[in-house]
Every structure is written in structure tokens, then in C-alpha cells.
Image 1 (cartoon, rainbow, N blue to C red):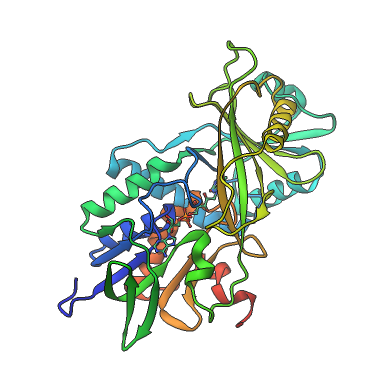
Image 2 (spheres, protein in one colour):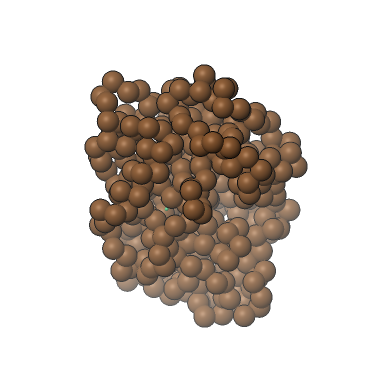
Length: 381
Ligand SMILES: Cc1cc2nc3c(=O)[nH]c(=O)nc-3n(C[C@H](O)[C@H](O)[C@H](O)COP(=O)(O)OP(=O)(O)OC[C@H]3O[C@@H](n4cnc5c(N)ncnc54)[C@H](O)[C@@H]3O)c2cc1C
């Protein structure tokens, strides 16, 4: 704490993003308070469910290229410092109609960002990944640097490193209000009052309720389901090495993803498929028809992969209208940095955002990599 009793920085919300930001702040010498209303990692927000995909061939936009390079380097640093393995390289295969939107976006974005990709014809595909089945007229694009991150272990690693650097981690203590006043921000929780020169708001799906009425950020929270299956035949090996990560167009619309089996079942989910929800009232049970839709998608892509259901999970997406992040100063409170890095694809960026947000908080830097994500781009409100 500073001599006056306050912190240099406070981070509110310790999912993967806030946890990474806390580590970068603390390792740079900022006296940092970190609050979470639950005990992270937990399953109420967006950072749980064992695995997350990391890839460079980024259909969302080539603008993410520099941030992805920084993120890959950052994951390496976390693994070295924490002494844990978080990243498993599997490659990622984007599969869709040849000439269709998904495939064309991957091609264009990779070309513009200089990401090496390999287009696979049906022959290549069946010899590299015999378990996969390709629809007629569809094609596959391989990003061989892609892989899988361990979700809960990543949150744990960031928080352990942050604690080691002296951050004050306070769990089961949620912020109830904040006020910017007299060159600092005052924070209240049910257990205490704190002050900090700068506050990072990274509460994931709870951002709309915490940012205050003066923030015009049209976020939508949706309930998204994932399921894990064992293959129909016990001898079928669907582990990494036999299968890459697969991002595949669905027959009608949308995209589904498949994560190879790391010993916990093959994971399958749909991207941006869920219904709007209130994060405090979300139905956490999974319906039979949701499981069957996932099983059917999986079995179409990888025949017989969807046998016994072994687990399922409900997770929350917090999305902006353009599905890009919102990271930067609160337009009406300069000591508050707002961080909404979800829209269903933010996990992989945690160390990059941690580093850049810490630069902003400590030095007042406004990095060009964050420029596309200005919080006020949807209007002043
Ligand atoms: C099913 C699913 C699959 C995904 N797949 C991928 C993927 O493959 N690749 C990828 O890159 N991304 C993926 N994502 C997105 C990624 O997981 C999210 O972008 C990321 O986890 C967001 O983390 P966060 O820290 O912003 O939010 P959260 O993890 O939700 O953390 C917010 C934290 O704030 C805390 N909090 C809330 N209110 C308060 C308060 N008042 N005071 C203090 N603390 C508070 C909460 O308890 C919580 O711990 C996926 C998301 C989901 C749901």
C-alpha cells in the first residue's frame, strides 16, 4: 500500500484476464489489490471448462495478429515462471465449404497477418487425420501453431505468480461500489473500504452491472454449453496427435469446435449459439436436446466420436455487437480501465492484455494494439 493507505492499482474480477493483469501489475512493482466475489478458478463466469483453443489463423480479423504474437510469448513466460505446462500444440483445422465465408475469412486474415497456413484437400485430410470425415465440397485449412490451453490451471498460475510478487489477493469479496474522487478511486466491498490510484474492471459477465450507468457499452451475456464424450468404440484414439482442434462450419449456420481428448473426453461446443442470460440467474444444468445437438455435430465431423457423455458445462460469453473486445479507459472516469475481453474468444489473449493493461495503468501508455478495442466506439451514450 502507498503511505496514505491506498493501493497503486486494484483489479476487480479474477477470471483469466484479471488474474493475468494482476500478475503483470505486481511484477512491475505496483502495490496491487485484487478482488473476486468468488474463489477463482470457479465455474460461474467464463474462464472454466478445462480447455481453451489458441490459434493464429484468426477468422475474426487480421487486427489480432500483433496481439497474438504477444500472447504466444506471454504464455511461454507464464509457463516458465510458474513451472507448469499450460499450452499443448495440436494444430487447428478450420473446416467449411470451399469458398464459403469461414474458409475465406481464415484465408484472408492469415494472408494479411502473415500467418502460415496449409490448405488440405480431402486426400491430405484423410491421410493426416483418418478419424475426420469431410463433407462433399468442403475443405480444411491447417494452422499448425495452434493448440490448447489448460483453463483453470492458467488462472491458478497467474494468481500464484501474482501472490508471489506481493499482490493482495482477496477472494469471496466482491466490489459493491466504486467512486472516482480527489485523484483516487474508492472501492467498497461488504468487508471493507479501499482506495487505489487506478482501478481495472475485469468482472466478465458482471461488467454491465459494475461499470455504472455512465458507460455506454452494449454488452450481451449468453449461456453457452460444452460437452465431453467418450468414443463409441473404446479402442478409438482421439487424443492430440490423432486429432487437431477442429473449427467447423455447421450445416445450417454458425461454427462448432472440437478439442481432442486429453484424457477427459473429446470436447465439443458451438460458438455464439446461446440464449441471452442474467449471470446471476443462469440455468447451470444442460438439457438433453443441447447434448444431442452437440453429439450430432461431433459424429458428423468425427464419426463414432460421440458415444457416452462424460461431462458438460455451462459457461458465459460476454459479447460486444461487433464481437471484438472493449479494453481501455472508462469514457467518464479516467482512473478506471474497462476490460471486456470475451466475445467468446478472449482467453488466449490473457497474457498480452495483462501486459498492455499494466503498461496503461503504470505508465499511462495507450498501446496501438488496443486501439481497435476502444470502449467508446459504440457511441458516447
Ligand atoms: C464455453 C466457452 C468457450 C470458450 N472458448 C474459448 C477458446 O477456445 N479460446 C479463447 O481464446 N477463448 C474462449 N472463450 C472465451 C474466454 O474463455 C473468455 O474470453 C475469458 O475466459 C474471459 O475471462 P474474464 O476474466 O474476462 O471473465 P471471467 O472468467 O468471467 O471472470 C470474471 C471474474 O469477475 C468476478 N467478479 C464478478 N463480479 C465481481 C465483483 N463485483 N467484485 C469482484 N469480482 C467480481 C467473477 O467472480 C469472475 O471470477 C470461451 C468462453 C466460453 C464461455
